[in-house]
Image (cartoon, rainbow, N blue to C red):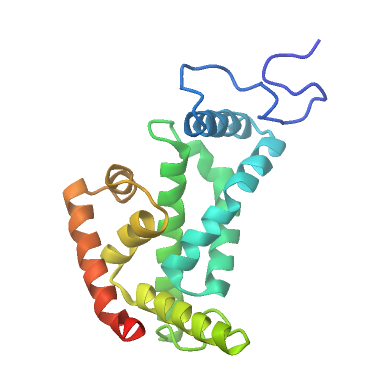
Length: 210
């Protein structure tokens, strides 16, 4: 007889009806949060399969945030690897008072900023024309890639206080309340920093819309 919380074959399969009903509405978002909580609990108990599933579910998000914060694909790869390794031990610090994704965003943002500071201290470099995504062909793609590269560079040049809320709200689509919880500032502060980031980027990117 299969015990509660285990897949029939003994593996970790959160989509097989094994996630307990905790009153969260099964509206997609609620179910995803419930699955995350279940996987975190299993991973904290030493279930490597649950940890691997948790990483599989969020690895693309980790890389995407790291890329927008650092502005460099190689740095984003490094940050992603660091976060994947760190999470195995850092999960013990997740107390469940917020959604796992809120906690994860905070870990990725902090790790990305630390990595960028460390890299710039060692090299003294700022993001350059060749530091981001390669330009593709044919000609239309060259222009599109150039615009994308310029956009990433502009984001990477924003002050940290503006860059983080911009990435979280404008790119990741988070609400002000969740961004405030991640950055540990008020919603009003998030709104103000986001407004300044938008104004800065609009000024920098105006040449592309001319």
